[in-house]
Structures are given as C-alpha cells and as structure tokens.
Length: 579
Image 1 (cartoon, one colour):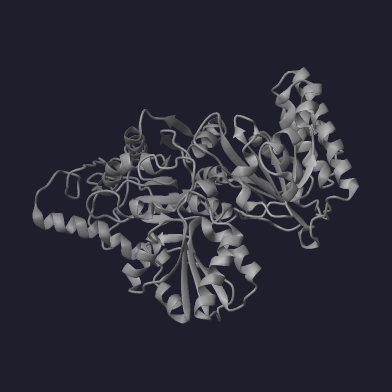
Image 2: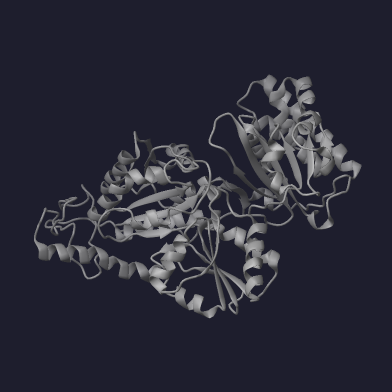
C-alpha cells in the first residue's frame, strides 16, 4: 500500500459515512474538540438525509497545519460504518483514498482491489468492550492514533465528554478510545499512512464554533432580548443555542405554535421595547410574510434570520441552497424598505447579526440575516473575536405630551418611543395612518407616509456594508459571489494561483452597493457563482447596474460547492475563452 502523497502530509481530509442513528456526529464532536484542544486547525461540515434512522449521511473533518475553512471533494481517509457508505461517496474516492473499516462491511459494498483498504474489526472490538454502540468512540480513537495526536489528556477528555452517563458507560468509552488509539498507532507505525500535521499551543485557546452558535452569539451581542420561532431545519440550532442562554443573558426564547404567531410575537415584543428576532427557513418564512409587511407599516424593528434550504415546498429539508434571496427581497405586500445581510463565514455571521439589530432599531425596519444549511452546520476553530467596537446603539426616545409616533421628518425616520417610557402615547396601526397613528384615508397624507418610509433608503445607502475584494485590484477576471460561497471561492483561487483573478464577495446584498458597476466594468471577464438555479443575485445586479454577468457557476442539487469543483469550473470557463 502506498503512503499518502507528500503534498497532503500537512493536512488530512477524513470522511465518516453512516446511517442516521449510528452516531457519526458523536465521532465528529469527539474529534474536533480533542483536536482543537491539542492545537490542530479543524473544519467540519456535514450532509445528511431527512430521516431519523437509515439512509446515508457523511461528515467531513479537515485536520490541518494551517487554517481550514471550506468543503473539499477530496477524501484521504474514509471510515464507512454501514453497507452503502462507500457507494454514497464513491464519486469522491480516488486511488489515494484509504478506507478504514470492517472487511465484512466493506466487501459487500465495493470491490476492494481498486481501493486502499485497512481492515479494522470495529464490531468485534466494540463487542469485546460492551456492545456495538462503542464503535463510534473506537473510530475516533483510530483517527487520533493514525495521525499521531498526543493522548496525554485523552482519558480525562472522554470522562468529561460523557460526564452525564453512568460510571460504567464512561469507563467503557475510555476503554474504547484507548483501543482505537492503539489500532491507529499501529497503522501509523506501519508506514502505510504518513502525516506531519503541525500543532500550535495557540489554537487550543481559540473558539470552536458552528454557524448556529455564531449567529446566536451575534444576536446576544446585538442586545437581543426576545426570540420567537417554530422549529424548522436548518434554522432551529439558533433557537436551541439561545434557549440555553436564557438565564445568563436575561433573554426570552419562545417556541410558538406556528410561524405566523412567531413573527407577530416578535413584533409585539419589539413594540414594547425588546430587541426581537425570529429564526426560520424558507417554508416557515413563507408563513411570516404578512408579518413582514406588518412590521413595514408599523415601522417596528425586527431581525429575521432566514436559513436557506432547497424548495419549493418541503424540497430537500436538510440540504443547502441560496435560493431565498428573492423571497426575502420581495416578501410582504406593499412598498417599504428593508436590509438583507448575507454572512460569508462564521466571523461574518457574528458581526453581521450584531449589526442587524442596530440597523433594525435605527431605521425601524425588518433586517434579514440570510444564511444556509452549509454555513449553519459548518464547525471550525476561530481566533477570539475582537468585540471592542461592537456596541448597542440606543435609538429609543423618551416621549413627551403630544408625541407623534409617525412624525414626518426630513429623513423619514420618526423618533421612536415605547409604551411607558415618557408621557406620550405610543400608537401604532396596521392601516395607513397619520402622524399620531390614527387611521386615515387622506390620499395626500397617504403619499406622504409612503414617501416617509421610503426616504429611509437614502440614509441606509450611506452605511451599506461594502463588498470585500479578495485578491489584487489589478484583476482581469472577477468572480462575484455572496453568502456562504466565501471560503470555498477563496481556497479555489489559492489553488488556481492566478494573480489576475480576484473575488468580489458581498456581505450585504440589498440595498446593493452603489460602486458595484465600477468593479464589474474593470474586469475583462466577469463570472458569478451562486448556489441556486437562476442566479438570483445576478438578476439583482442586472436590475440595479444594467450589467448582465453571462458566465455563471450555479449549483442546485442540495450540496454546497467544493473547492475543487469551483476551481475546475473557473478553469473551464476561462479555457473556452482564453482569458
């Protein structure tokens, strides 16, 4: 058996594949936590079927000497836990892929002669320890031993990891991780696999975050005091995370009976002065749309975290897509302003969510934070976030007698009072209204109120989050993208190694940055990349700049882009036109 090629020695891509219910998430959690504490860079992401038991799911864990942050097609080590695991990822398997697994499972799944294979009797080892349930912990130990991770605090780590279990279960898991580590060390010492992944003591003190936690922490930093939602993948993780912080951060998290109730509760809480948020996905948000329009008319701030997944209808409920941009952009009947932010990575997810609360309060509008399953379920280590510049901006005023909630102002932003803070009456009305919130059908006043609300866009445009240019400003080819494609495209461009290609990434997709046309006109060739079928952001760019980006890299099968895939597609487009 050949060792892995030298260029892969400083990083390994491990893929775990099993049925729902087999516990591959347990293996992922053990590995990423222990590896990070041991000083290794880690990145993990998953794809899974919409079922509680059965099917085939896979998790990729990148373990690296340098920061890793994107999904790869490449599999260096594959551990299949069930028959069908190899077939599920067979398109990603190369002659260099090494499979670690039970011969009995592997032999029924794929011809061994075409693959590197090391027979590990997981089931027998687990049975000797106490049952098949310990296969997961054994597998985690095998990976740690194979790549030569020190085990000096492994026993204590497992004891803490399983601390809510009985002492007998804890002891058996310790035995399982030790036995797996012993097997992995034997493989390492055999010379069949060679790695020189370097660790750093600085990494162990970094944050280990997934997308749900990053959005949730951003909400806390933004002063969120109320969240109401109805569970819907992949957005539910944000609600779960914030519910765990209720006592420490004095926040109310309410699981509503449906999405209509959820957004109306958030609007009501915001009217009372609490910074409020909902978290949902496409199908749930469809039910919230009338509430979005209500927020527009009442001029009530609300933050809407919309975590995208493939539709229409139930679609692929556990997969990823960037196909709800237009849904967010045009949601709600009537005309009123909004802001749509689209984090590209976990750092963005924190800071943009925090910013969303200030923007919503300042302009008294709905503000969207658009993520997707890929970003929400990705997990990686990050340096400690510098939050010294983050602060909650207070835009609430103490009311006086004669206070007018919808006072006509030059910039369209009326002083916002809340009930009980001051002497004024804070009226609101979902019908068209006058300055004091009384219903009106005065048609001249109607125009003034519409103009008042839309005037806010002039001020909003002055503080748009600008796009980030990755690469040289002297580019010939410009890749344009938004949201979660950020890290994948960055790594793809590093792989291509061409200094004439740069990447323009948008963290705010609406209102569109006014200098967008200048960036596009400078390029000899423009390419746009999106996880949808119709290039929704491309259409938005054309609407506001008049420029149609004809070269498109689109993906809509429910999976995220891989680094290799993006690099290959860029090569293909440029090769045809010899740019």
